[in-house]
Length: 389
Image (cartoon, rainbow, N blue to C red; front, side, top):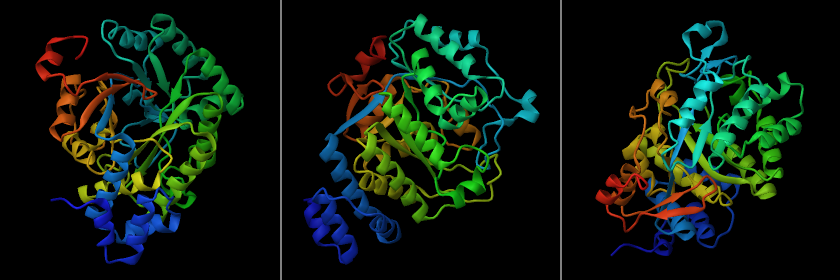
């Protein structure tokens, strides 16, 4: 018979870990120092049991996914992040791609007969793709399909386009919201600590700018996500510092939906000499994130980055969301060496993946409204019904 979480914590011989575990059971917030202790001392089994306890306390067995697709306007970028395997510097822009508004609208129209709920727009920072260019794109997407939720642009993209347009961050966010932008993804956060950020992405918006743009979005009634790039040159204290800043902003605004740890991949970039984190460290990181980010309702494993099987495994370590169908979105991570090369998963694929580990698949929209419960729907029905698959 399996042990209860109380028994697991009581039997832990390390007094620090036992104390932290008891705080988690009692719904008490763990401190930054305690977060570092977890990274330094806690075995995978211990933090995994605690994280699963929190996950099930929040969501039971529910595991969320959505039906979405991505548009990547360009991989040409003025910035030179050392970990990036995706972008082509503007000086070599002929090696990259740049989509027109009409080309992007054609991507949207490709899904006209499909029950997708979200388009996710993110890419490089191209100096000719201006604030007005993207506002025009947003208006045309919403005019064509008003029900499609538009999630787009990292603070890296937004900060650059606002500065070029000579608008304040608030003016820029208000302008894009009026044009049809409804929420922000979590990208561009990387690691907030300046001593790390200056080494890996020195020339793009800093931590304060990233946080300010998300705070403004929240004040305007928009929701957003948050990421953390881990497993490169950062230390455990940098991960906790990063999560602490996000936790403080969430205390203030409540506008974040989900936290998404992103694994550093070392192929085809300037940090290829750095070994990638092990799967054990990946799962420990998810588990500790679930324990530390106590005011974030959801924790996501992004399957194109982690791979299908590892994303499935993460559902036992605090994760309750694996993103969505994501047609044609894996260029960024396949270029960086992800095991996952397949550009999409069907609804049946996602439901099967979730059910294989005895979790409960729920289709959601961008804001985590529950759209459909797939727990009692058999795969054959999903595969033969276009409205379900």
